[in-house]
Image (cartoon, one colour):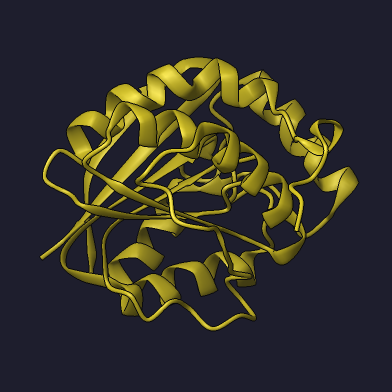
Length: 203
């Protein structure tokens, strides 16, 4: 089977812009971790960049089935030893991997999913993580039901016009789901362009 043609290789400009600030957070947050499950790997750009920068980590990509071919192009071209084949994971519908991970990462996904899928994501993590796992979620978040910037307000309006079920999530509501999954908030780091990295720890 031949890999998809180069024209089928997805590209996300935002991944190029935010990968270095996120990497700086992950180097510290995942310093003692070994196996990472990335939920919603998108284009695959983050996976290649982070796995190359942190070769001691096994970086497991996952996404809905329709995105796996594009992710595979990035992984195949990079030829890294620590990126196994991506797996299909619709967090609300697919069976979760039975492998136990000690870290999970997701970027710019919670505001794309509907709220039921966000709930399913954290419920699924409860069974996929080991006793001392670390979870990092990157993206825009509201605080106490309020936007943190005019640009986030505009972005949220664009999201809801495209899909009324999507939208920027309240950090407090997301943290409540994490706590239900046995995770405790360990960090809340401001990032460029009015984004944040929320970091949770288990155990």
